[in-house]
Image (cartoon, rainbow, N blue to C red; front, side, top):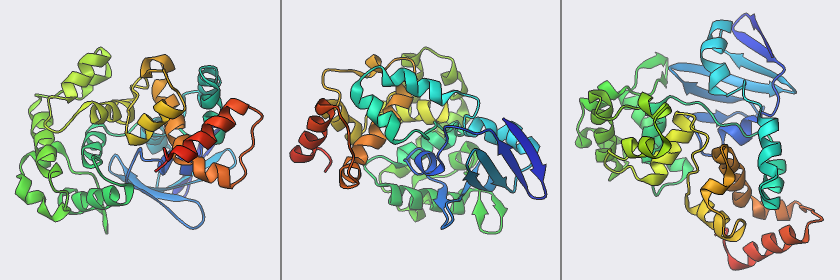
Length: 302
């Protein structure tokens, strides 16, 4: 993988196992939007960029080579061999093998931990369109303007100065007080996000669950998408159905050290089964056919 800097953008050659739509539009992050040409605009770590993939070349506009080395290489997790991981998780279960083949370009983003924590607090009992709207209003109201009309994610220090009533413009309802509690505990050091990178997994989860409104799922999402604990296995409504219908009798621990990557493939797969069937998904594995069709009949996708 090599990075070359040009006027206003960088080109990174030798990028494999990355699909921007599969990665940026799968519910990991809520600050990216797709353009008609397949490129994505987004903000992370206080930087506004446009990214586009052409074969194995990744173009990042409004970025320097130093930005790539310091931010985007890690953000897109480009040094981890996802092809090898897909091979390993494909051995766990035949359905997971199909899931990995269906979306081979999923990568786990290495997001800023506090932003991941807040966005997944917002995600509770919510849909992606509404989550994106709340996150956008949060940034517009309380984030630093980094270019005309573009705002960084607000800092815990800024948020800790506010009250739940101050967040009324977000229209986030009950989540407002959770966001304030998160900011205050992170800013004061009562909750140490950085320690969660190295703590025993259960201890890291408990550390995050000190925050009001943070349960197991939000803690697991924060650990996976904000702290790159790829053993984390968030179980939302979709994944619960996937576990019941596609992986009966299995538990998150059965998916191994890269359970979080397996989870993303399984979650993506279960959400798109209807589309797969409509597109004429074919497989010689009768067990998979029966499982897919049975899932459809029982309404597990609803």
